[in-house]
Image (cartoon, rainbow, N blue to C red; front, side, top):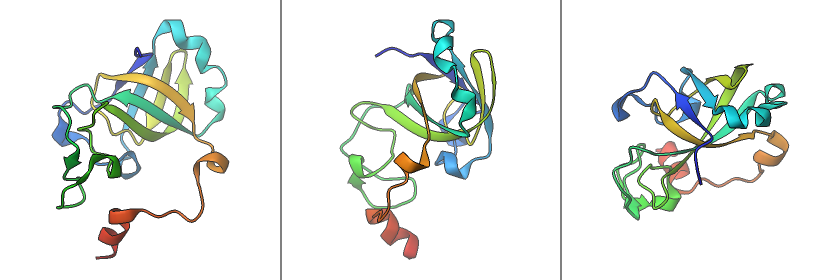
Length: 143
């Protein structure tokens, strides 16, 4: 894989980054490299997008991690922790506008300069399953 662009945000350190995009109203820009600008056609018709990116400043991986919203060790695949065998991140952001090869977004939760791997439209019909279980997180949020 190779990046198709770069994400620009006000966050220069890991401590500044919100835990999840849904907890952020911070704005940023998603810059697609010029060779991919044709692929942005029609994207402005969507209100929200998935961004897939590289945790480029991840300090390695672990199979058991302590999630940001919990104090117990959990299997990494049951969390959204950045210490993953393949350091790939996923965020849903609100699309505020498009200027040529730059998308203005809100709800960003990544470091400035993060390499962008892909953009996909968020479609509730496809992306909101019913009867969802959220495991340890659900139990934690009831406490």
